[in-house]
Length: 167
Length: 321
Image (cartoon, rainbow over all chains, first blue to last red; front, side):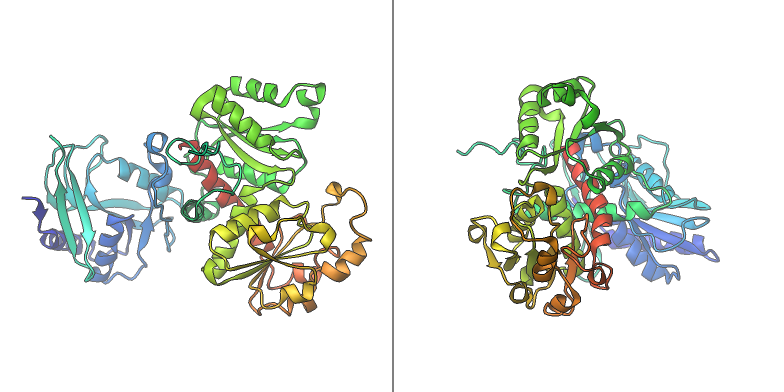
């Protein structure tokens, strides 16, 4: 099977977050580009008051020395006060944890948040850093040479495919 | 097959930035897009990102400059590079050491990037070809202005400024006014504007300050400023380069101002939303009137701010090409 039910996984993530954030004044930050799509939709579905933030991890990646800048860079936009904020960082796939590490550095360039939690659509295992998600749509271990590819349809719904590696 | 330009590597990526000539529209937009992501870095709590940590950048200014040298230094520091400013007038070059010997010595000190300004056209090319030959792909050269030839980062920051205020290049009339003959900025701007698809690039100046071959570069030439200013969207004023003047090309600065100085009255001939640019340093009352330089249509200080982001983008693209 090369596709997953992305909509069902998203619904499960939304449920998990809805229960956890009741009574809190949270700020969502989506990591470009897949995480930004998910954060945008969560922001709408959760009816959050604070504007949604978007973040590029490119400036703090640990593979710049090997890969350089990504071909299409997007800017970080955090349209709220980061100092003291209750932040939920949103990404699509949690794998090695290196993107999350870079994203945390990026957030801290803007101030000192009170708390940062992590929400991901899918956890594929394979962690190389001590990172865990508080909110996760589904666990789906995947071989290191394969990849999940998230795309967004015109109506805003998600599509999730597995790209098999050679092995 | 034509020889590869020394500023490109075997994959067609930028290894050095020496000139805008020959760069594709896609490459120019890629640099401007990357610069856009760096603009915000300068207004964060922490105005620094770690991309160039451990990289040594040498500022080699064989010709005086304040703004360009400072913005390169700030750009490198905001990327976490180590910056060394060489004061060339008091260095070994003045004791007779050759340019390339100076470079070899700095490379032996593990320099990773040279930012070079030189009064001789072609000096940064010479350095880039030398390091390509002797040091391979790991040392990078940025031309910060060579003689009358090119000033590519100024050209890029001018394009960034125009794109910021006007969005679409393909509907613009842009006028470049003044001492085009001695201006490396004009050359880089004309190359960038035509590559980015600006349909009408105008050059305005007296015959004595216009080089030959402008029509071949795809520009319209005006010697009457009032005619040339009509309906332009962007006007780029050039500095009257006294230090590069040989012989009597002009009767006087006052005479120049009368005919080619940008006043409110001449600016009124342009489109009402025309932006006024100047690469600096400005000679008030020579090429531009204070009322215009400080007026609402001037974006001259925006150019300076964007210049840092553009130089950060160029450095971080080159460092890992």
